[in-house]
Each structure stands twice: as structure tokens, then as C-alpha cells.
Amino acid sequence: MSAAPDEVRHIEAEAAPTRYARGWHCLGLERDFRDGEPHGIEAFGGKLVVFADRAGDIKVLDSYCRHMGGDLSQGQVKGDEVACPFHDWRWGGDGRCKQIPYARRVPLRARTQAWPTLVQDGMLFVWNDPEGNPPPADVTIPRIEAYDDPEFTDWVWYTTTIQGANCREIVDNVVDMAHFFYVHYSFPTYFKNVFEGHTATQFMNGESREDILPPPKEGRPPAVKAQTSVASYHGPSFMIDDLVYHYDDFDVPAVLINCHYPVDADTFVLQYGVTVKKLPGLDDAAATKMAEKMGNFIRLGFEQDVAIWKSKARIDNPLLCEEDGPVYQLRRWYEQFYVDVADVTPEMTERFEFEIDTTRPNEAWRREVEENLARRDVTSDATSGQPA
Amino acid sequence: MSVRPDNRLADGPMTPVSCTTCGARVEARKSSWEQTTVQWHADAVERCLERRASSPRSGPNGAAFAGCEALRASIREAAVRGDLTVQDGAPLPTNPEHPHPASPHPDGPDHEVIHA
Image (cartoon, rainbow over all chains, first blue to last red; front, side, top):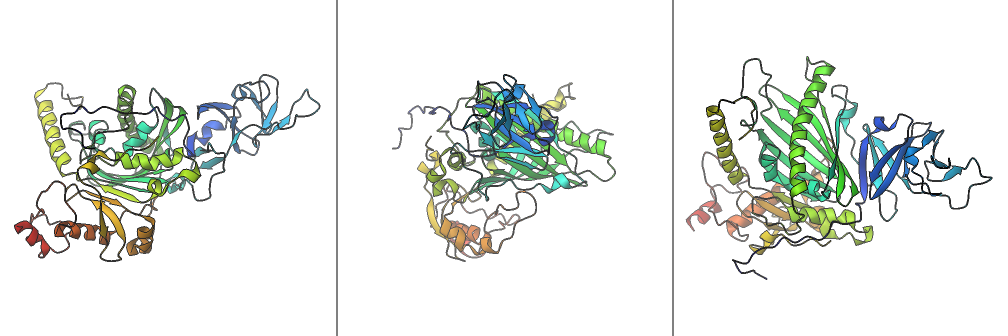
């Protein structure tokens, strides 16, 4: 099967799957759904309605009323039910129609789709399963202790809809070491992936890029020098990044969430959140500002990701060099969420490790940083801190 | 949606390696002395002593087992012996100021390979 050395390599790609991944998906911060209103969420190829009942439990139903197709998210929450704006049919959080004010009785089989929910650490999750099974007890999202820790800030949260890209693109990031330099302005020095069961982990240590940081100046707050990060996807869409920002004289632990849910095969909603440990002497406002600063740097990276995703080709046969991460093996792991449970094979879930040799990438990147710095020194516009 | 084979495996396949500590059998590949790929199977995970003795690290991702040092050393030894091909063909690095932490026998088989 060896191709002739001068044969042109062609990009191959099947259409993005129309099926949506089985697993827990974070829809956002729970507090945003607790205003007494129904909320419409376009997801999994359809539309969901999210509302809180009188006990404060958040419920998620298919948003289209089984009566005449009215959009429940445009209706009202009445008691423990969501009422359709079209004919006031009342739907309970269990998916059953509880009442039709103008009817003597509710018809048989008046049941719509209800999604299992989980509220944890300030976030709302729904369980998506094309086979309709409840979430297994061993498929969970781990607790994030920082959320309950008064020494950490509240979530600083970002939401953005990405059109024109399938969510596989963002999942690929977890193995794509080199893009962290080119797209996220970081400098990985150690990089290892481990896939096992339904988790995919990235161990990454990195340094800050001097050519990206603003030049040091009196009075300017100290900049992050390096970071140590352990980031795991728990299922197909929810990543927790447990990281420590290293400064000259101190460390700042932080937790970054990177999650998404599919809208359709070609659109997804990307969300990310940051919480950081408050430094001694910093009040809540200053600590939140610090989390926002980190969030804004992360946002810059994601915006650059988005620009790439929107213009890139979907590719099932990427041509990898030895300094790239395990893209194929990641996709093999990711495939488990797109097949029936009975069709999940050992290859998809068995433990796999891949440690990249960063020697050569680091030599090349050090040179590039030096060149950018030299260029910055000679240009008069030395304030932006961006590479030319 | 079927996943294709890694194009890099066409240059050098995964090779069976056994752990000299517990006997767990995995498939490994090294593109260089510093790069390592390891495919485990269920029996190896069960057999691995370090894995069994490990307890979760702190933090939300603490359940992820980072790797087995004994297996890492075994894979390196297999490469030093020549049983596992190092794809880039570079000699074993021997910078005395920067010895490799996982080097199993700094005065042993390393030299044989260097002078080979």
C-alpha cells in the first residue's frame, strides 16, 4: 500500500456525523437558567427548553410542543410546568403533559422527550444519548473543589457560537501540541496524552512567550512565566483544565473549563470558564479581574482557533509528522461516543499513551521567539507586544 | 465514520514490549529517544503493579494515571538493546551534563550501543 514518493496526497473526509455524541454536555452556568423564564437552547439538531420548577430543580425538555408544535421556550413557566404559548398546554419536567386548561382530560401518550440533568459546581449538564438510555453510574463529571473554595473566584464565563465547523475540530486540540504555539501563543515544553475509558488527558508544561508578553517595564504587574497543566476531557465535550500559573515569586492555581455542545453537524456552542485562587492581599474584585485577564488571553486563543476552523477543510487523513500528537488515536477514542454502546470496541477505550519529543519543536520556537524579539526591538512601535 | 490508521505507523509499526517488573505486555513505538507511544490492553492494565499501587492525585483530573515508570524503563531498555527500533536512528544521547533521568543502566548497555 506504499504510495509512490511523488504521488499527490489528497485530503479525504466523510461528511460530519448527523448523530450527536452520547454523554454529559454542559449547557452553561446554572444561575443563568434560574430567572423564572423558559430558555431555548438549540442543540443536538433540535431545540431544548430549560426551566426551573418551584423546588429550584432545572428541567430540560424538547422545546416543541407535541400538540401543534408550539415553541415552549417562547411560553411561560407556570408552577412546576412550562406552558406552551400556542394553546397553554402544560408540560412537567418529567416530560409528561400535566394539564390542558381547556380540555376535560389529557390525551394518552402525552409525553415528550426529557433530558436527564445534572447541576454541579455551578454548571448545568444534560445527558444526550441517541439510544435513549439513562446515564450509567460510572460516567460522571468529577467535582471541582475550587468551586466551593472561598479562596477561589466565581466562574468568569464566556459563550460563543461557532458556525461553519463541526465540534470534532475543538476536540482535536487536546492532542495538537504545535497549535498551542502558533494559535494560542503558548510554548509547550512537555506534552503527553493519555486516553483511557471515556477520558482523554493532556499533560502539558509550558513557558510564556517573551515575544507575546508586553516588554517588562517599571510598575507593570509581573507576568506569568510558565504553567503546569493537566487537562482531561470527561466524555465527548467537557474538559477540565487543572492548571497552575507560575510567576517569579509565587504560583496561582486555576481551573479552566473548556466545553461545547453541538447545535447541528456544522455548528457548535463553545463555552469556557475560569476560576483562579485569590492571591493573599487581593480583594475579590482584584482577583476576579485577574481571572478575567486570563480569560481574555484564552479568548484571544479561541478566536484564532475559530478563524482557522471556519476556513479549514475537514480532514480524515491528516498527514502527521513525528512531532505531532496522536490525532488518529484521539479520533478512535472519540468514536466511542458516536456508536451504540453495544458497538464500542476495546480499541476505542483501551489505555493509550503518547509522549511527544519536544526537543526539536522547542529549538525551532526558541529561534522564532528570538527573531520576533529582535524585530520588536528595531521597530518603533514596540508597545503592542504582537509578533509581526 | 471509520478511523484510519496513523500515517506514521507505515514508517515503523507498534512493537510488543514486556515490562521487566510485572510482565505486562504492551505495544510500543519510539520515533526518537524522547518520544514514546504505548498501547495498553486490559490484561496489562490489570497486571501493572504501579497502576495497582497508585492512588488518585489531587484535583478534578486526579484519576488519570500518568504512566508506569517501570514500563517506561522497560521500553527504554528494549530500545537500548535494539529490540525496539528508534525510528530517527539517532544514537542514544549521552550528554553527561544532562543525563536522562530514566536511563536504566548509565554504565551498562548504553556504551555498547554508542560504540555499535
